[in-house]
Image 1 (tube, helix red, strand yellow):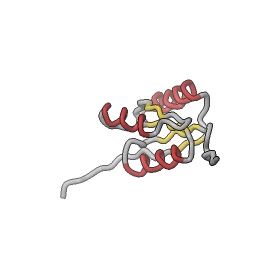
Image 2 (cartoon, rainbow, N blue to C red):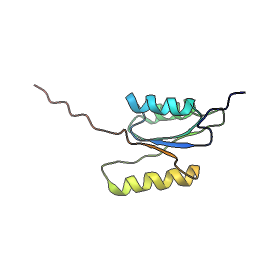
Image 3 (cartoon, rainbow, N blue to C red):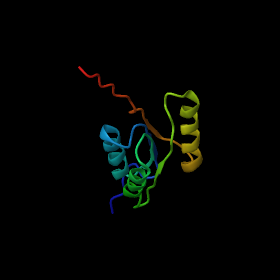
Image 4 (cartoon, rainbow, N blue to C red):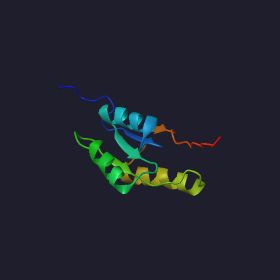
Amino acid sequence: MFTPFLSGKTALVTGSLSGIGLGIARSLSAAGANIVLNGFAPESEIAKLEKELSGKGRQAKFIYADLFKPADNKSLVEKSIAHFGKVDILVNNAGIQHIDAV
């Protein structure tokens, strides 16, 4: 029987509710990792992603943090460790997009 190679590991992926970050979170989850989701999205979308990435011995947990605030960064890591016991993988994917009307 195949055991996912990241089974028992926890990955914190910032900006993981859409785009590249969500793709990374899905890939890490498929490899067996627990996932800490972070970013901005409606609660219904967050709940859907937590459910999608949970199961088969892994969990996904959304933890809110505004990464512009240093205290929120620290809290994100502390809450991740409190929930999962550790963070093995950190993917700093969060970013901002500025669209300027021409």
